[in-house]
Amino acid sequence: MITIKSPANIAFIKYWGQSDTQAVLPCNDSISMNLSACYTTIQLEVHKDSTHKQLFIKNYKAADFVEDTGAAFEKVVRMYERTRQFLGASKEFGFTVRSENSFPKKAGIASSASFFSGLAAAFSTAFGESLDQKRLSILSRLSGSGSACRSVPDGFAHWRKGTDSDSSYAEQLAPPDYWDIADIVCIVNAEEKKTGSEDGHKNAQTSGLFPSRLRELNDRIPDLLAAFKDKDFSWFGSIIEEETVSLHAVMMTQKVPLYYWSGGTLNILRSIAAMRQQGTEAYCTIDAGENVHVITRKNDVKAVVKHVQTNKLAKDTIVNYAAEGVRILS
Ligand code: PMV
Image 1 (tube, helix red, strand yellow):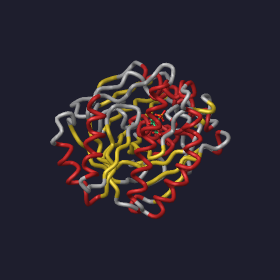
Image 2 (cartoon, helix red, strand yellow):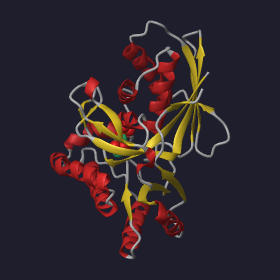
Image 3 (cartoon, rainbow, N blue to C red):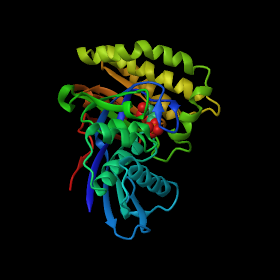
Image 4 (spheres, rainbow, N blue to C red):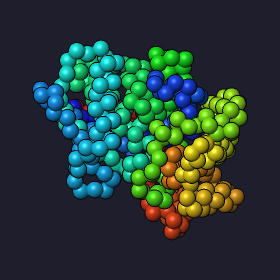
């Protein structure tokens, strides 16, 4: 039995669109932070009988594990095959995977990143390989959920897009204790979204705004790195909000459009902007879902949580700090 814990991550500069769908190569670099309170725990039981393959999932706040025989199970089998291919392993085994999330899945909180980075670590360990961080990051990227590669290094990560499969992986930008910024996930809707990012990436380049987004990133990425280096939170925050709007403008203008924002999303965005006007520094970022990630400094966490809790459209909050990457627990 192998037990793995792997964090979700929130991107400050987002990955959207692929230059190579087969190899899961992104069109741009992305930068993220691992989340301390949003993680997946995976237990992998290995069987001699290689035809015995099962997946059980315990959802956020659920009491029991439930067997999944649908799309998620197929992706797990696909990941097992990709790991085998990546390692050039001749051995085969059967497995039972039990996966438990500390947060709602498929709701714009990177559950696929924590799940697939954990699965990459679990399967490679079961094949008897102890991968270094670079190779584990590459294998996680090959899962199909590219952002999984950023859950491998501890703390803050920079995924360089690279030019081929061997050069596209995430490296640590800074350890978790580098900066005490927090990500307060404001749950507007814990239900699973209808279109996942895997499908969304494929149509990114059909948006007329996509080329200008990539051009803007040529300045935005170095600016964000400079703000991070200087720990200039005002500059950093304004860049991440601008980046979020740029991402969602592309999503909304691709063919087929993706409208992830709901009224609740916009309401929280506006209320955080109003809070900023009153002097509390907090900024929003949003992934492929309607839930809002509010980024603030540790000293302002209590005030922001209190503020969000007065909003009836926010059903729950999860406070995260920068966390370590994927870990083999046993
Ligand atoms: O890695 P994927 O395929 O789950 O895509 C992630 C897409 C975003 O969450 C919207 C952005 C990101 O960089 O995390």
